[in-house]
Image (cartoon, rainbow, N blue to C red; front, side, top):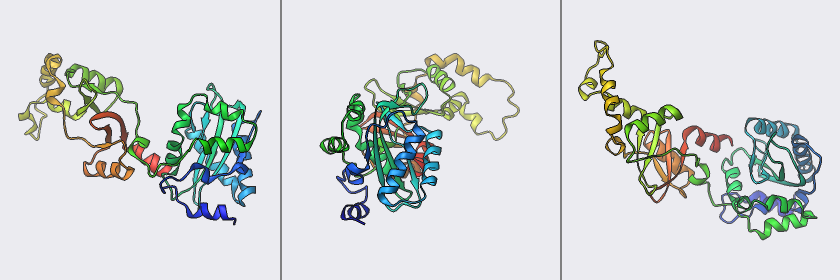
Length: 317
């Protein structure tokens, strides 16, 4: 094992300021991969890594990557893909890079991919993929970056692109890495009718409520709506079978346009700040026995993390 590989093996992705290029060199870059399919490219990159680093069992690695791609593609944005797998047999990460000026189809009916980073990750380093993804944020923001890199004339130039860009892994996986930005918030001056319509239309169990500045003030739960429907004295009763009509619900229908969310929302909900580490998300959800955690920037609602997504990103992705 050479001095560079020895250093890489001792480094851990969580170390502050670790450059993405510490995981590969110009010799791990294959430029101008044209007229090739996604699966063929993945096999070529794996064989190249195996030859360079004496890796064995690449057929199993290939199967793991293809299974991952078929289940949930890894095209992230603007012509960039990061096919990857987490593997038991690895002691350290391996990265191989490919470029394609013509582009390679990773997903039918979607634009081709021009920059590919194949990442093999030890199974006991669950946050590494997300750290690599966040380290590429500056590249992802540039819509032309992938095509620019794909037209470079040598592996050394591609390597220089990553070195010059200062692509550095973040110190840890934070809430912003885990959250979904697909939000359907309600306003605190919305009425009950708006909330009921939203619950039915979006098939949700809980909806965040924000004020006019986008600051989170609470949540409305489907269970809260039922409590609004039922008079308090009914909740004291253990047997409601004698009540056969829908009178409690009829009363709600009569008043749903005049019942405001500010009067029924819950101000006790799970939340973290964007830069809080993943373990804080887990702690907050556990303490509050919550399956949803909201991500805030100060008080402003930025995203949401639900438990299935959290488990997938930490333990599988």
